[in-house]
Image (tube, rainbow, N blue to C red; front, side):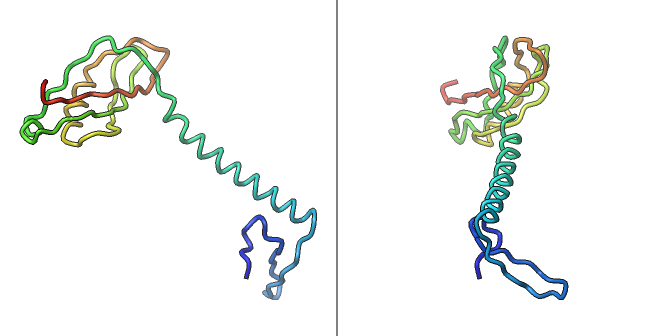
Length: 141
């Protein structure tokens, strides 16, 4: 039995009052209308997905006015863990960091990176913005 939900399916199913299923072969304009309806729904779904994803990409590139170096966790030093931690910092209009969320990097280093970035100062801006920053941990520090 063909899938009734596919847009290119020329067969339409309907149920009568008695509960019997009937199928009708659609022709010409009916198939075109069905394909257009499916296309519009598909476009609306993509638009909703893009609307949800775009704010995450709308990061601000504010200049960092002052940085605080992270404290290298002792356990990470002993285990010889190094690397980069990427964070998203929410910065207010005055340039103060309001919130920090880790994006990627070693979990052993995340807390130290978050604590350091919370103390950073950024250039003032028009309002709150999300800035992506990186904190690098190297054993030579």
